[in-house]
Amino acid sequence: MRIFTKVVSMILIASISLGMVACSDSGSKKKDKKDREKKEKTKVEEWSIDDFEDFLDDYTDGDYFDRDYDNCYGLLSDSGDVVINYRWYDDEDDAEDYFDVAYSGFEEDFDDDLFDGKHDMKRSGSQGYVVLAGEGEDDGSWIYEDQYFYGGVYYADHMVVTIITTRDKDKAREHVDEVLKELNFPRP
Image 1 (tube, one colour):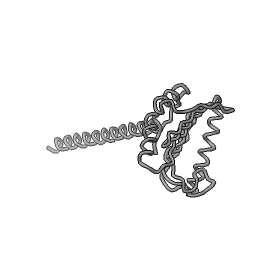
Image 2 (cartoon, rainbow, N blue to C red):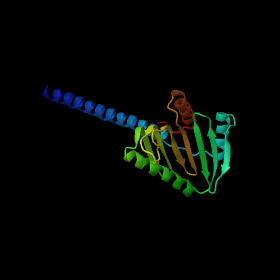
Image 3 (spheres, rainbow, N blue to C red):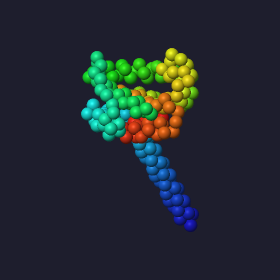
Image 4 (cartoon, one colour):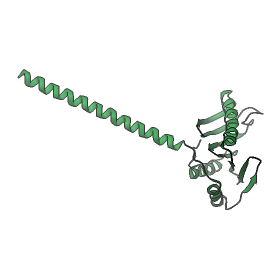
């Protein structure tokens, strides 16, 4: 009888141990999947000039203009609620430099508590973003005094896009969210 009890006990211990291992792996896999999904949601994909023009044609009914700068091509739309500024740089290094200046400026303002609101920043390889929702508290910073901001700056390879509203109204924020959702960019 003792041998039988020991065998049954060992089987129970083994099955409980296997069950715990299976559960921990399952939880780990679920966590990994959530992490991958979150990473995909925060990744900024590059939009070509033609694709972005098609997007603006649909979104603004063609109410935007283009401009050649010294080192990039730009598209600008100001619908009243949402300002969209798209820049395509021939040289990826120029796009990176442009984004890095903005990123550093916002980072300094956030570190110096010159912004009252929520924000998120990410910079990895040749892509990144700064998203914000709130009000600036200092004149002369990247976030102007008593100016409300909702939206962000997005960078991927050759492209830098700013999508923002300065109107503290639900309708304006909804328009920004619609644009960001359509472009698959992170939202504030």
